[in-house]
Image 1 (cartoon, rainbow, N blue to C red):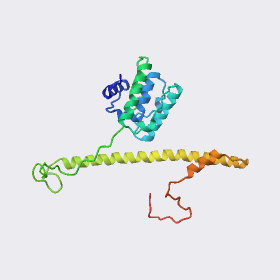
Image 2 (cartoon, helix red, strand yellow; image 1 turned 90 degrees about the vertical axis):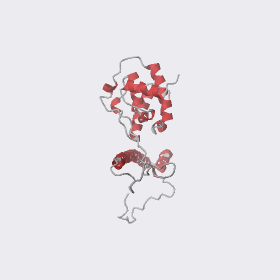
Image 3 (tube, rainbow, N blue to C red; image 1 turned 135 degrees about the horizontal axis):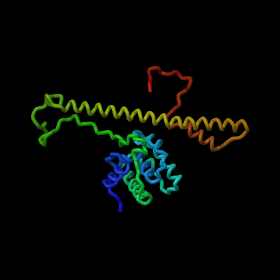
Image 4 (cartoon, helix red, strand yellow; image 1 turned 135 degrees about the vertical axis):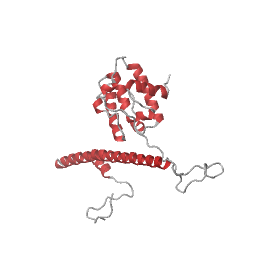
Length: 246
């Protein structure tokens, strides 16, 4: 029988001593990794980021998980690209599978989840709340309900402007953090591509020195240097507009 979302969250929180409220929060990958650790007890939890906030951190968690699946010969594809989007249905289906796998393989031994992650925080991923509406409420007749309202949209002495400002400030802070994470993710993948580019170039130069060539390496290099339609690589000798910034 398939477990419900409520049952799954209750089981997950009890097993891992965390405080998740939604199945979507499993998308960071940390909880999935620790479920496996509760079964086998040898997962490298020092490499699992339980308080991951950004997609590149989620991917790193799934890399650890994929290594465990391979080592334990677990024949189950991990849909990483779907799970990291933190969508309910994808994570619900995978968590249901994880629960069935746990039921079939957990030996009943005592598991100290907090100690295994060395007390690392396991707060669920944050979500961005919708912006509050700035329009005053209208009654069915089209007039503002509750009497006359000043031009600013709130009555004198109301706490609503303060609360709205605080909400907006909180969202600005969270969006700034999200932007910082995207920049780190961009740099993370750029460095990987740069390492590949250097490795390919070095190998091509070695082969050229021996009078040889490698079609696969040339194709990889072609992919690395390809550009989107309409995008032009700037001429290295062209003057740069000092006022233009990126």
